[in-house]
Image (tube, rainbow, N blue to C red; front, side, top):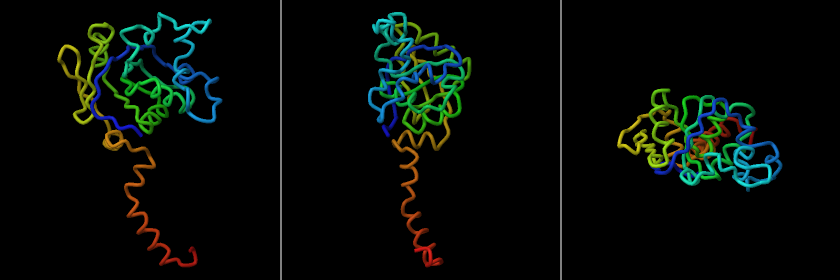
Length: 202
């Protein structure tokens, strides 16, 4: 899993509430046997017009936000089905962090397990950030995970909270398996002791 430490880039505003995973990754992109090409599916019905051309009205197709590394999202982002493809696609598209007020639970967990930082702000903090990133000239921010801050274009900082396990996992690029393997010596010792006490299990 790709680690997240300190990252600077454009933040794109996408404030719609209750954006579900079928909007993030439509069902026709779930047919593959691997994860390749999922970046094409992200927000497909919003990013592209009927003839397949990019819709210039969509925020990620506009020049100032085409290379966005962050999305400023509305409340309850990622609701609906539990499809992990939504997170895989966002990451392939280059989105490293989602910043909002609330996220759907399963989607939130999928982000943490796949190296996409989810930052939860208060509505007041969210509005402060939105005021800047909706303007092309001030849409660049720096997200500092070790310090748990977002630095804005005007020099102000917004602090955010994150649980210690998620923070440690993201900083070290560890998914659930990687976290488990941190205890491989203890696991091996337990296995050996358990088999000594119960040799018939060997």
